Image 1 (cartoon, rainbow, N blue to C red):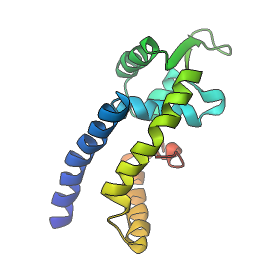
Image 2: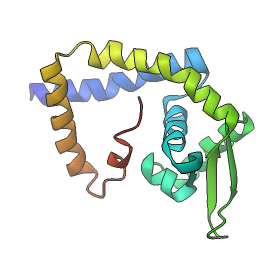
Image 3: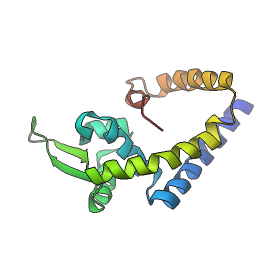
Length: 152
């Protein structure tokens, strides 16, 4: 019971910590940053909207709304998929690439401060194993684990 209550507390509190830092330092929500990070790791910094929705665990309407906000800021652009005219691609623009590169150090520092640096190396290994096991249970298709190599 203690483990579950503590995990629930972390799941409740950590998103706010990450969101606050990103809003303050980069005028981005954590989800907007996550969308940008997924695009930054993709070939040509481009993904179909459906693939981006899977990787960010979003519905297409939610993702479309967020991408529209990022488009309005010149960070992301949408265009018809050359391989399938029915699909739409999203691409991180040069300004978006610059923004994520400028934003990443502060985000990484926040993650380190609140997660990594409070753990021993052994606990970090255990955390990776524990979260991997949970992720396999809640994401059996591996949609979010595909982004496991993404820079914080």
